[in-house]
Image (cartoon, rainbow, N blue to C red; front, side, top):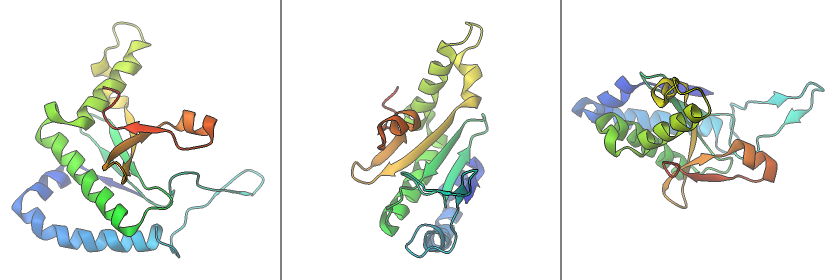
Length: 176
């Protein structure tokens, strides 16, 4: 299950009315956790190979993620580790809302902005000079997860993780 949230929602959450809505949102997020990520979840995504055998999730649950699509076109998707606890899930959701709100409030200080720009620059570096990082920003698709042990978002490296057979990641913004 993928849930998309927009900038207007996070902007509203920063206002006074959003504070009243937070408790309702928190209860709803708790119910989502129970249905999709907790032991005995009732909503389970199953992928099958062509031969019909099941493909197991490796590091992250395929049952639930949240995605934010910016007005510029770039997206950031919050993933949840397979072993995420209810408290870690709640912390990740709150931190994700804060990450988006901080970006909307002040891009110059946003770790998310630094990451978006660094990825856009990396993409543009292999293209002809007339394609600038500004052209590439809308094509950036970030995956992030809350690293509870470090208290920050990490960006997984799917290629390196698949090659090594273990989760390889780096802190969000460390590429900048």
